[in-house]
Length: 436
Image (tube, rainbow, N blue to C red; front, side, top):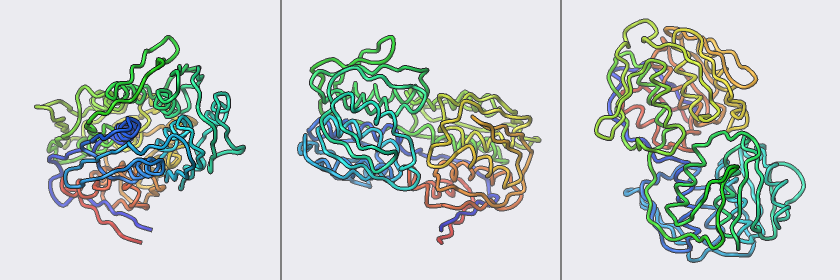
């Protein structure tokens, strides 16, 4: 098993990093391109494991792709998209691929078998198992994967809880334009992760789908059709958070300039700017680049202070914020984060164990974490839990640890950010990957 050791930096940590494209944005643009049944180009695509899984499922449905790695350009030819037939769709560990493609395949009339790996087979699909049979789709009994569907998704009203995963809502919004008369998605409970729905709506609008917001959800009118469109995948705010934490913990106080982000992004994690300011980090925009620096880096606790964090709308920021909290003066409370227990790992358990394992103080609660900060930690070993966000978050801890921080499952970063170690080292970080 591959592991990575993050050591105290040998030199100044800081500089410029170009953040990779948003995984959430990229999934949606690729699927919309394919559903236009035409030729489209998606710029600024990085071929992470999750992107490969979405491409693979679409290829199984007849879509063709060409990728120019040097240009980060993906050409999507949806002309061969099948509207019936059989397919096996392997989703790897990508929850987005799975939950987006189930209703899409159903709307195409595909008799499909969905499979996955890692913890994906354990992640809940009950919303679809309950809902799809009410709208023309047969679903096999049981739980998790494999999941088998047949029939064709019908127009109508879809009632979905909003506090489980916004991915179910996105999947339906992507699929309903493929039905004869469109339909409506109604949210029956409070909506969490609203930012991910906004990303979906923006992508749909780019490809010609008109969505009307209602009192309880969204309505897609009859006759809606995907139109071809060339698009650009913007930078990922949840990935930027790892470098914001690094900027806060770097004892040199040298700024980190994060390029590739949109200031007007629909991503919910764009609220990272305000959250990091709350902890005491200086964050501001300069000519379209996000500049983060800690002017109090040499002071005890780096001048950082604890904060209360409601994670209902920003679950993917929790790992990075947890490491920041481990060095902030006072006790940080992270709450409304219960959904993190069913991600690639139980992220509450993973982050709490990792912080305690390197000398910090973290208490795991039912729906969050209580983290009491220390000026420095001694370092040690942490379980990466085969979770890309856990491994990347822990990297920043080494900037204020006396000894190395060694993390298992180093390869997991390939899920979303294959070049992460290269970028970390380029900024002055000291990381050694050990192939097991």
